[in-house]
Length: 194
Image (tube, rainbow, N blue to C red; front, top):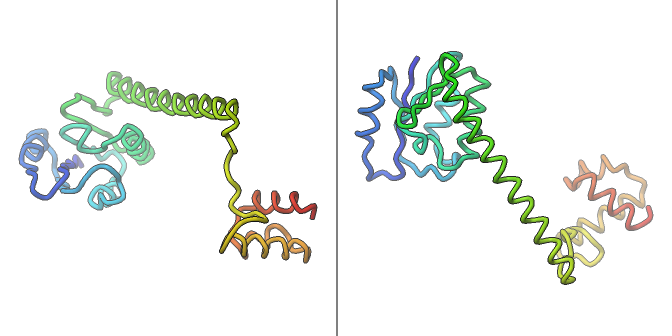
């Protein structure tokens, strides 16, 4: 089945242009949504659509920005479609994953490479920032949540973990009872020589 997905960001915007393009393309079923595309969480029609797509269905959008507002979100959706073996068409960008369209695969791979490059740049900037902060003596690293000088609930949890360790409870038991990560419990155990 060829399914069209049309989305605008607000209720007062019009879907007519997208619906016309999707209908002219030959979509047999249309899903319409009037909600911001900033996050996928509030896009209930898209969620429902992705859960109903089946092998060899074709998802069609008038343009990529109607499906996703960020490259990571787009790539995540593309991965879901690939796993389901659902084909994808974006009319404006001339992307069509059917029949092993080399251009479409190339475009999606380029987009994936750009996303990976962006992630690597962020990591590099973060490392540089940490190095500069260390030179200035301003880098303290990630602050521990549960420690001897913690306050309030965090202090209570810390004291409970120490007491349980002193009573020879296993790290796994403490983890189950407190929901604190095992690595954190091991750190507390090491800090207290237990």
